[in-house]
Image (cartoon, rainbow, N blue to C red; front, side, top):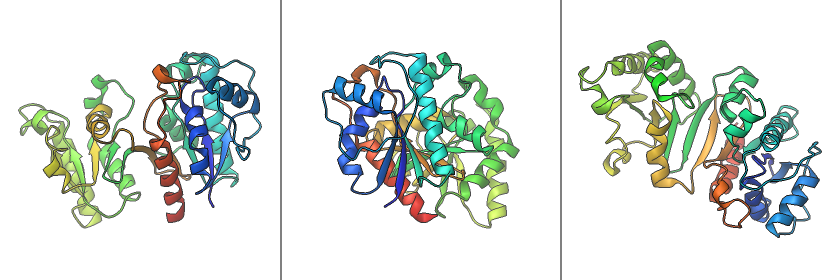
Length: 305
């Protein structure tokens, strides 16, 4: 079985609860290694009033602070970062086949003095490669051209050369099916009446399709109808120009089952497709489906390599 390094995310959130809940099911399909120290694990289990499975394998890590459920905290932010770095290191040293991550809290990372906007940003800088964030499930996947940047900065990021690089990188990571590309503006710009960013997108699509020799990318699709039932009959993969454009319809349709996959990297990394859920942390209410699907996706990606 594949060995999966599990980064436990923000210890004040739902990540460790999910890991404990799902362990018996996960351990039937892989060998999970949890990047958490025994002291924090014992404290979390006590707060949750659950037993730690006997085969719950952890790695040695330093941590000298108390869990504060549902609290944005520099200590928990730092530890979630260190858990992630430990998991990456296990893959780099061939002690694990893939990384699966629980949710972090970006403000907690900021409080800890960490200059990253999330997992994918860290991966991009760590490996010095243009990691691509793609989220979804078997029914629909959405790759994000821009991720965690202010909305006001999205339009100036729509440049033909950058789009061409993005499309070519994405092409190498996905099955050879048609990929729908969303326009940026309402009505995909209405031929320039509502914005001209679509000209950049269309030029990039034509350039890449010419290089690939077939119609790999289709667009620009009008964003407000791209995810209708009829449209989704034609596409399994989408490219959204910005975060909420793609993730709002995805999460409305498939919130509980979607996963986050990092593409164009030398390691396999998947993640749950939800946040720290501080509103239900340590209440026994967290759902495990996204995590289980993330582990299954990681195993599937490992088997394809």
